[in-house]
Image (cartoon, rainbow, N blue to C red; front, side, top):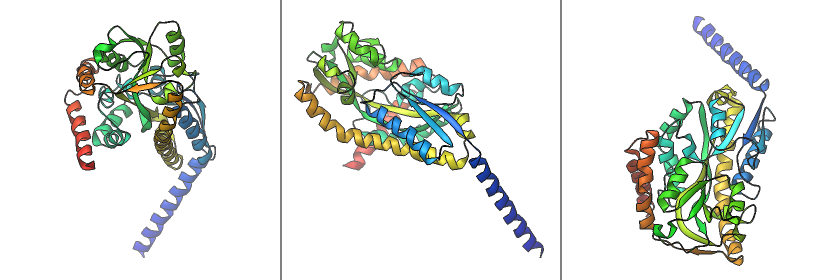
Length: 339
């Protein structure tokens, strides 16, 4: 009899807990601002817009996400600061911008490391990245997803670029990321940090001669391809962004809705990778029709030129000096398994 009563009490407790959790989820409402710099023609914009709508719909409005692109609200480092300060915020930013809070984050997307989305995704699923995410969570940054990638970044100018020496004295637009500026410098050029919304006028006025960016950026808003026509295929950095929000905000969301946010974040990231990869071939053909040309480069020379970036990350952010070799081994293991 006692055993029966104990089981009955346990069942009642579980039922009560389930009811309480259901009430908690039903009574929970949240409005989040989602910001980044991207333009409507770019895949990061499209994926961000899709994500905001998907979360709002699938949570039945309990979590309402409003997307602001085109640098309308805080972007870059200011967006990361919003998360650290615990704002009702979601951002999509370049991973090296988290290096002030965990130096190893910059090493994860260092130059000349990956040659495909598959290699990058493999590393992102590793224990190494799980550890970085855990350390960022301690700084109130919750990484929701790492798959928001849109190709690889190459050098775009009106010059013939084949080796680092060809970039000597050439001013290129760089992002606000210090690591990106350092990479541009090691490629052989002079970095001029600015938002991309400023870049086209800077090219027109001769302040810079071009930029380093992806095919989708070259084909995107403002028609950059009308100003710069030559792409040197350095593929020096994967064009990727990490989706994030404040850790305390994430933990405040009832599990029912939190699981949906996780599912939407992953789904939209993978969707962007797939759609961008399918679209890139079309974009290249369209750009060729506009007079844009591509050329192969001395990848070994550019790889050697970019090696100091990793030493700089270790010195600048206190990153693990052994991590680069661990990442290279992970990528090599993946490549060997694919053969």
